[in-house]
Amino acid sequence: MLAGKVALVTGAGRGIGREIALTLAGYGAAVIINYNGSRERAEALAAEIVQNGGRAAAIRANVSDAAEVVRLFEETLKEFGRIDILVNNAGITKDNLILKMSEEEFDAVVDTNMRGAFLCMKQAAKLMLKQRSGRIINISSISGIVGNPGQVNYCAAKAGMLGMTKALARELGSRGITVNAVAPGFIKTEMTEVLPEQVKEGMLAQIPLKRAGETKDIAEAVAFLASDRASYITGQTLQVNGGMDM
Ligand code: NAP
Image 1 (cartoon, rainbow, N blue to C red):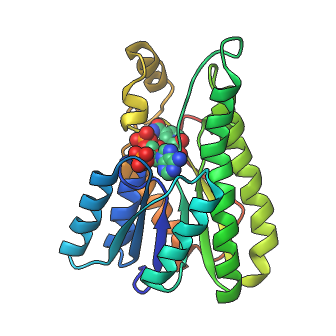
Image 2: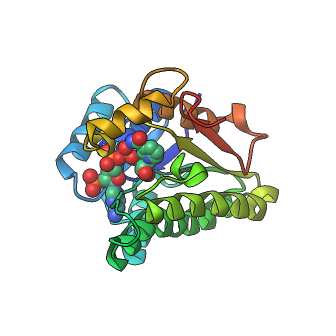
């Protein structure tokens, strides 16, 4: 489905990003596994993909740093020559009720989730406009759609990503480039593992499909949007949440 394509996945050393990288590689794409702190896991993942006959490389870069993002794209081009698919997956949370939320907590979450996506889209757009093709997929969140107490920073960033998705879909549409978002619900990863049991039970109670999502549920949605099968879909948000919001 993705043979001959080159995909850059940010924050792909672990969690949802790791599964997206594995899934895109499974469909035939060469994969750049961006990481920030998880070097060993990212390199092990690249080695696993190569061992299974695929193409992959792990490249460190903090996506909220403009110079590091420029280097990430330069190194990717050196290694693979082009980028067909960008998945903006890197993200963090720093939850707090607004009276306790510091400016640092607000800025860090907006910088990593939203500014990081902006910086990567800017570099990708430059290449994709020349290629006259491309797929950009932003990993937003149900929190950016319905809101979540204690997450003013995260909800702002994830809602901002949906706005950027639509704006860029309009900017790049005439050149055959699609820009879409996937908004996961409650997915089992290290990000949600740390939530108090009571919060997890509260989340599960809101899910009509009666289970937390698996990383694979998100990865398959991303692979679809990255493929030619989704060539007439742009500016959209695909919610993958077991029916939590409908
Ligand atoms: P996770 O397990 O905590 O993983 C976060 C990933 O983001 C890691 O690979 C981390 O890389 C990377 N990252 C963080 N800061 C970065 C930076 N400055 N530069 C580059 N990479 C950075 O989280 P997850 O659950 O897989 O979440 C992945 C995405 O899905 C996030 O955008 C998250 O907001 C979104 N999401 C998750 C859920 C959920 O229920 N889990 C729901 C909705 C949306 P390093 O370890 O290398 O630093």
